Image 1 (cartoon, rainbow, N blue to C red):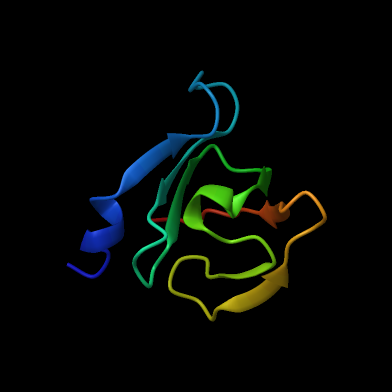
Image 2: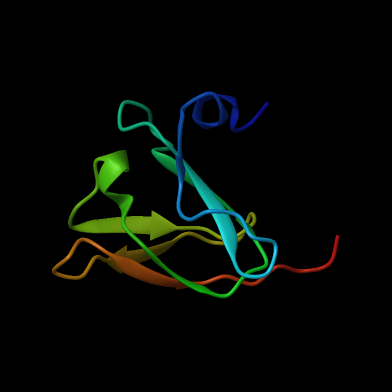
Length: 88
């Protein structure tokens, strides 16, 4: 399985799931190549901190299996990500 190592890693719940707003969890492991994997339900724009993945200057974001995009983190080590979910 392609993402097995990160899926078996620690999980950070970004906020309590309500079913009315964005629900998301972040899998993190700073010791492997794929350091973080974000799963989002009821998407919107998220402000993320990849701190637990060992990232503090820049990171690469890939949505679905699209092209990776390098982004710089702000002074608070955060990045805003617009999340879009397509049809299945």
